[in-house]
Length: 255
Length: 309
Image (cartoon, rainbow over all chains, first blue to last red):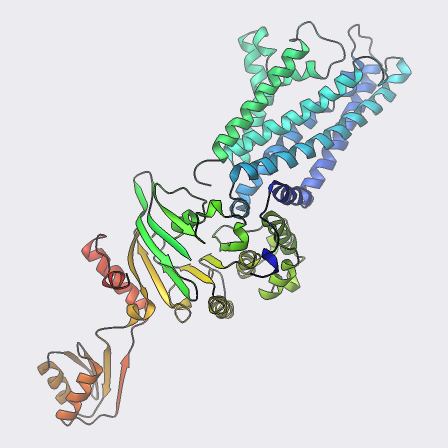
């Protein structure tokens, strides 16, 4: 054999590097990400400015400055599902599987890279939204500092919430393989499920993933929402369920 | 070396592949021939660990594909699905495959050169012609310098020049001791390259033999240009052959060997201007095989597959 075969067998690291090249190499992904981040920060500033003029007894300066999460969560969930569905729609999933036939390793590599990407995007997005939002709130004396109790926790809650949507999207992508059904599933979970649950009863509506998020990144605990530990655990259950279903479809059977 | 034993796969009620067994040896180009929908791609996908067979097993380089340590450095494959995302350049696509297979990145410019894509290496794959995509697929298969090559319809979308290039490439690869397994539904294109053929129809192997056995005709058609056409026709008939006088001075004889016809010519004093025998092409042999298969039902295995075992 020639020089090509001198190295060792490909490992998770190699699969992850290939996945990184796939995500970073497409201009469409880079553009979408940049637009999402800018748009979300803009929305956060806009809402914070509007809130600064209002007088509200139960005002939460963190939630106000993180309003950009609402549009961003959809974009991040779609990015998550795209990392799997793009391979099926373009047909490159087969060459990926030929290079890494241990499917759990390929899925793990995708998951690793996707999680790292969404965490970085979320950190930038949440950090900038908070900073600019507080600047907008400052003139009316409503702003909070990052050192104040609970603020950092709420910001990390926001990053976890956004990254969680990336994983929910990823799971639905692995489960459904095609972009349109995967997007539909994400939209159902994000926007339709809360409406249906709320129609059933107010109690049920509080357990939709997007309702749990409000607790995860709130500075002030809302009495109507489940407590923070309950919200975090339940949100993790949604995420785990999506990932398990996705893996159950991806790993066995025909590619 | 590829060894397939008792492979079977059904989709619902449709038996896509039904008890398929064959071996592909290194050193020559083996064709995997059959009409569209015969089960070629399904068989190849099972060999490559993409689809899971209902029964049977496929061994490649001594083990099932999925347990190969560095699969793309042992086996290169070209599938009907594209190997590259349209939004990426040829070079970027190959770099990804090199990273995933832990192949030295220096191989990327080498295979681009080898497949004649060096001048479009930085262009997006979305703008590629079908022929360029096929070349990129071959480049991807060659990337790991593998000892086994499995190519599904590699001549699809290639122009005559591209087909000639592909034939030379395949022959060279096989001559270097590699195992080369090429599927095709178009038979003429690869005919001169193939040394061995595995023929599949309706999910079953109907022939597995050297290509000469398939094209070697026990009944060649012998064409004789002669002023004594009537005499020759009568002589062939009396010798138990079939003859047809197609023109005033032309007879086409079948059912006799060339030697037998030559002896008839001699004993009957027939004057001969020209005598040629036409070897049947792979296309003819293939159509004959398919017709026989349809007549006798799928259970019939062609004689040459028994001989070659």
